[in-house]
Image (cartoon, one colour):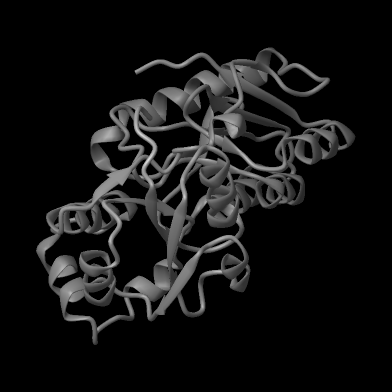
Length: 273
């Protein structure tokens, strides 16, 4: 990112990614952080890292109203919102109208539509990876164990599936075992997709989580952390493949330590389009 805004609107979803991004933004020169938080989704800890927190019900209209008047000219969307919450919102006219306008409703189209509505207010939406360079691993092997020949082949298959189906706007996680695609992430999210693949394939599955070709980094960036690793261990997956400049790795030291203890290989691939 070439510009460091003085004031940042942080549209904060679940888990601790919004908190980490706020701290990283502060360390890189952002002076004021206004958090737009959602009841039932955003961690209460957001109040410890933001200068101001505005709590809303999950929705679009009230959020746009805040963005128009809060004084921030830049925003970043960090953390997910429960898919079930998005589709329960009959009372939010703006979001309901947006959903009705989308012939295909998935994470990419819904978040893309929301991003477009935000930018209509004059607020620029920055990449979800903004300020988080220290959390983006370089290409190479992160764990003690390298992928074996079978896992390397499954990695290439999974990566090709993600890149070749980019136009379908489905998930960025694929689970493969011995050349067979076991699961492709839909709207349920990464961890449930991993567990679904594990139920079908048993021990030895490979998890590939990379951006789609032409992926819009303003939203839905691949994020890996201890929850991901626990899902892999529970499902019996033995290898995780990411892509450089295309994933955020939270709690890297703890993740690598636990992966080594479980015999899981984690590799970061060189980027391709």
